[in-house]
Each structure stands twice: as C-alpha cells, then as structure tokens.
Amino acid sequence: MKVLYVVSASHLKGGASIALLNIILELKNIVDICVFFPSKGDFSSFLEARSITCFYSDISYSLSIFSDSDNFFIRNIKNAVSLFRRNFAMYCLDRVVKQYRPDIIHTNVGPLDIGYEIAKKNGITHVWHLREFIDTDFGLKPMPSMKSLISKYRDNNNYNIVITKAVQFHFYPLVNSEVVYDGVLPSEDMSDMAKDDYILFVGRLEEAKGILPLIKEFLIYAKEYDKYNLLIAGEGCEDYMNQCKELSNNSERIKFLGFRNDVYDLMSKAVALFVPSYSEGFGFISVEAMYNHCLVVGRDRGGIKEQFDRGKDLKGTEIGIRFNNDNEIHQIIRKLECLDTRKMRDVAYEVVTELYTKRKNAEEVKKIYDKVLRS
Image (cartoon, rainbow, N blue to C red; front, side, top):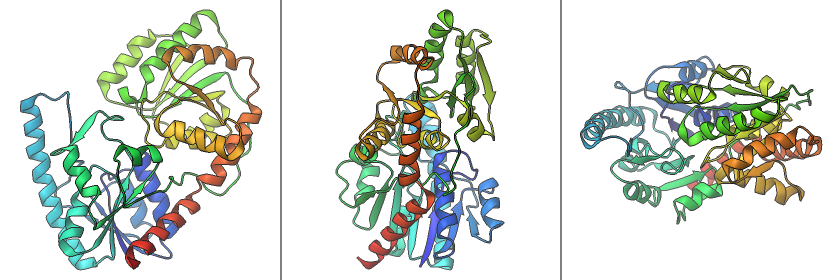
C-alpha cells in the first residue's frame, strides 16, 4: 500500500503536524509513505532523516482561507495570491502523483483541497483528515465558500477521518466519515510528580484560545489570594501578545514564558492546566496534560467537552473540571487551594492512556485505508 500525505505546514508546530508525525512513525514499517510539503522545514528534515521520502511544491502554498476582518480589497488580493499558489501546487502535486503512483492521497487538514483535486483528476482514493471547525474555532472562512468545501467532503471519491464527533456534527451530514481520535501518547508510563504553586496555559496566544479572559480572571483571584502564579507558555502574533501583556499590567504573578521545549515538565509540576478555548476541535494539549498527571480545567464545549464526556462514560466519574462562563475561572482557582485532585488525575491518566495512544490511532487509520481500498 502506497500513501501520499499532503500537508499544509513544513514545521513541527501545532497539533495537526504532530498528530500526522505520530501516524507516519507508527505506519512507516507497514505502509509505503511519502509526504508532499509546501516547502522545506524541520518537519520534512525530521522525516528525511528517517528515510521517509518527501516532495516539495516549487512555490509554497497555504490553507485556502480568509478572515472576515480583512477588508474587501485586502481579501481579494489574498485570494488572488492564494489561488495562484494553489494552482501551481496542484501542478507540482500532479507530477509527484504520476511519479509515485499512490493508492491513497491523504490530506492532513480540512481547509486544503489540492490533494482532493489531484486525487479526483487521477482516479485515486482520497482521505481527508478533518481536524478543525474552521469558522467557530479560528474565525476563518474557506475559499471560495464553506458550502463549496463541504460539497467536496461529501464527494463519493472522498472519505473523511474526523478527530471528534463535534467536528463531524459541524459538517453534518458526512455519511462517508468515521471518528478517529488523535494519537497523542507514547506507551511509556508517566509518574506523578509533586506540584508547584502555579497554574498553566499552553498554546498559541490568539483570541480563539481564550487567554485574555483567563488573565482577567486570574487577576481577580490574585487580588485576594497569593498562593498561585499563572504561567503562560506559547507565542502568537505581536498585537495579541501585547494585549495579553497589557492586560496583565506587569503583574509579577503572571509569567510569559514564550515557546518552550519542556512543556511536559511544566505540566507535570502544575496544579492545573487551564484550557479556556471557545471551540477546540480536539484539545491535543489537554490529553498531554492528563498523561502528565496534571489536572485539566476546561471550557465545556467542543473537543474538550467530548474528552470529558468520554472519560465520564468510561469511568463513571469526571476526569477534569468543567466551566461554562469566564467568571467561574477565578472561583475554580480559589477552590484548587483546598481541593485534593489526585483521584481525578489518576482516573484521567487511565482514560487517556487507554484511548489516545499513538499506536491505537495509527491502527484505526490503517483500518480505514484497508476499508476504502476494498470499496
């Protein structure tokens, strides 16, 4: 079986790239794999060092999306540039397909259609990995329209792997689809560590992640109580990062760490990881936190809610603390001072190591490949 993966990013940042890397490393000994990249980067270098074939577009391409915040003139310029890059990338991908002759073309993200178009042109089965809502999580719209993109998802030549039921329902109806939860975790056991006096946020600093309300609510807590600090690990666009820092008002209790390579260590020592995202497709970071015996406090929506619900269905008890309104956040932080969370953390660890291993995810993906090639 030969599978050609089409990706949107050349660097190993973000859940989509890491999730695909996990699949590739698990399947590389049983599937003939190659990957089509927009350009060279640390993702492709990592794969090439492990003897995995990588191809590149002659002109870098990106997701076919735009923002409502763009004015009409800027939007049209972006659309024209994106269309040119998309069409050239399709030309390059078509050459790769004729050379490599894959059995399946697998596109790793939803708002990227070049793999679908080339698969359809060459009569090859296409698998589309839908990892995001696009509009409700990132506030973006696909080009030329959401209706056009969804019609491609529903094409008989396409089969969708959907990372949560919430994403599947968002594009309802998707008859040709199956939910396969991301594989996040290795098989090794992680030990519980002593906790330091801080709560943690990990992720990209952007509006969709809900970091401003978290800072605001933490400051309310910090006015009355002095036990915990807030550590923020991640980067974002300069304007939004400046908003976050301005809101923090130079508080010594809020520490901006920037991008970190020691996230697991930060999680293992944190009292809790807060996930205030408004519409998370899956919530990669929350699974990693539970694996590191870190309590997750998350907004009861989207992929985070689904993780909590799956855990409760499996174990009969909550595996994290949910909130619906921003003003609950400072109350939860206060309660953490006197709450014994060990049992909840232990149950959460059991759940994620059962449901979200890399091996389990890769096995489910391979079953889908076998299924679509038989049909």
